Image 1 (cartoon, chains in turn orange, green):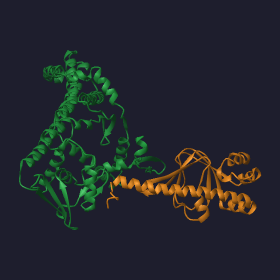
Image 2 (image 1 turned 180 degrees about the vertical axis):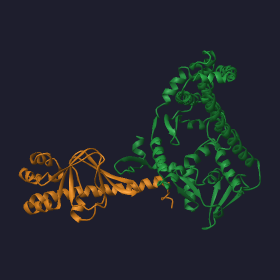
Image 3 (image 1 turned 90 degrees about the vertical axis):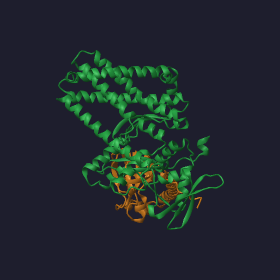
Image 4 (image 1 turned 120 degrees about the horizontal axis):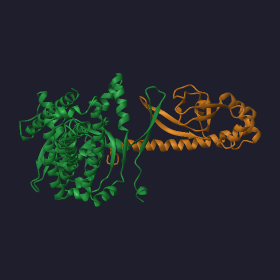
Amino acid sequence: MPSAAETATFLKTVRLFKEFADPELLAFASRLHARSLRRGQVLFREGDHGDEMFVVREGSVIISKAVTGRVEQVLGRESVGSFFGEMSLFDRSPRSATIQAETDVELLGLDRDNLNLLIEVNPRAAAAFFHALVQVFIERLRASGNLVAEVTRWGLEATGLDVEGR
Amino acid sequence: MDTELTPRRAKLELLVRGEDDATFELRQVSAAAAWIKMRPQRLPGGEFELAEVTSPVDRQRRFILKNAATERYLMLSEPERFLWERMDGRTSLQDLATAYVLKYGQFDFEVIPTLIRKLQRAQLLTLSPGSRVRRALQRNRRRRVLQAAEHALTALERINVSSRRVHPFFDRVYRYGGFLLFTPAAVVACLGLAALGLVAGVQLWREADEVAKGLGANPLAALIVVKLLFLATLALHQLVHGLALVHYGRRVREFGFTFLHGFVPTFYVDVTDIFMASRRARIVTAVSGTLVHLVLGTLWFLLAVRSPDGGFVQAFAAASGMIQLQAFVIALYPFCFIEMDGYHVLADVLGLPTLKHDALAYAGALARGAAPGPWGWESGLWVSYVVLSGVSVAAFVAFNVWMIVHAMS
């Protein structure tokens, strides 16, 4: 189990917490809880209830969405320093995708209560956190658009459908 | 430079969970791989009409295809009609391309996609994916045995060790002696060996009981070792196919090992470039590989004849020789429902690239009492193919059963 100081040192390298001062990070680190997954272990599944987000401290996870039967489409991967699970944290809706460990993984979890505490106790740090969050959201939105285009291109190539000729 | 100009083929990354839900696999599926496995299905018989028209100008045959429901018409050329007739929902685009090359001796890489686009626009065609075996297994997943069979097939199908940079290797082997295989002297040597093998075989046959005893207390295990040894010689068979390609100035595109249909372990060589050469080249390529088994079979038989009577070496060599000669006959014998070298030669000579497919379809229709049209030379060929193949397969199975029973008794 890493100490709060070690966790704070790691968080300093995470984009979401780049603007945090060292004392803020130290205080914040103690509110995160560590979680370990073995390779192949599922953290949560699409449709599960959830109210926390996770930062990857070690290893990588696969984000996938059910397609048919036992087949899921891989939407992406998150590795050291990146985060996931924030959507359910904010909109309280069920998990939109399944998270599975691609390697042995160490995670840091942040739940809704501790996020609210951050907003109340340290609004400046919270603002920096949300600013970084929005920047990542924009990047992910762009990546989603690219994925939609790629999947559409796959469908056209796989079926040989002639759209230009119609 | 090309990679910058040509767009990358789209790929999907899929995660497939195991039955136990605790395991998973990641698979990359390329659009190109999915496309060639498509099985185009034309409209059912009553929903289209096909009429032949011959141009009074160039005397070329053309065909008018009509969608009876939408009243849309399409003009098809002779090659396009050839492809249309094979779009029966069972033939994949890959098989269509092969049939086209065998029929016309050349391939225009745009002809199939262009025709499919035309037919789709006229709503004359649907495309369905996947193999029939796999679809049947998927439908019956609740049965544990079929579920296990599906898993086993999937696992085995994924085993493929191959290389696409093999042409320089084949080129070197050809230059350093491989060319000798394609000389008149090699043909004479083969005929001589075949005669010697025949004599040795007859001699061994007369003492079959005595020879079989040499396998000792565990003949089945010995026969399995013989089979495994035989598997290794399949690589040699494919190597000679590849050398034939080099001999005719064509390119060896790939060489590897895989499980055919998910359960038959085999080596393979991609000889598609030989379609760009003459019919003679195609026949020599097909036949040359099988001669490996004739030569090896003869050598094993000669060893058996020269080994001490009733000993293990004699029995092992005789069994190995027998299996090699069986492989030679099976590979070259066209009537066994398997599209091996001899079948390809026959199809090429007859000019019927989809002989097996058409013959089985006709036999099925005949069995249901729904055979189309009057009896002609083609239907005669189809029935002959099915009857000869059926009898041959039954005889082959009976012979092998007899041999194993005989060896064990």
